[in-house]
Length: 254
Image (cartoon, rainbow, N blue to C red):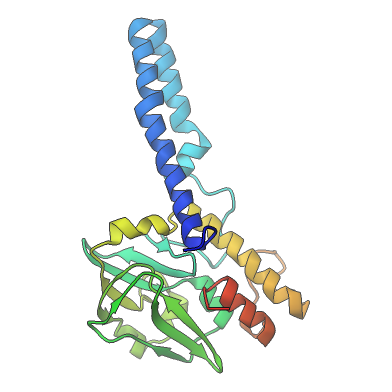
């Protein structure tokens, strides 16, 4: 794995959050409480003030998901808090202990446009994290969506046959694509992005997508309020830009 790969960057982000929480829990809070014990009652007052200050700090509240990220998610890219994003724009959400739903995030679908066909894996197929799980196609463009976690395919979403538009209309709930048996989900989700990091990541990735599309078309790609991508955004991406987007955002081989 490359030293600057998206998976490693995601792992570092999550790892820093965990280390920060451990430092607060194992070092800062005990130090405050010990000081309070020996310096009563002034120490007790200082301990209470310190704990309240830590709990109310924006960084700690963002880590717990109680406050929005510094980079709000653009309109139309709202993400449920139980969904974890793979750096190449697949997602995973736990159904129960070993079962996980997986799909393609909204940004990937905005870039491709409404899919015309989907190639699904057979039940029983085993996939490793980062391997192709399913493929979306529109015209002569296709995206191999990578498995967000390793596991065995249990089934695919039967509702997509009756209502293919669910994939774009409700990608994170009813628009899931594959159900996996993923016994190593806990270990592998360190490489995935969860709130609030996932929200900030999607905002940055939309900016990258706009830049890559803009570089060759030179046309506005946002609505007048500057937030949501214009309708038909995918049609403004020429073939040269599309190839760059596949490699840089969706993990295709160069």
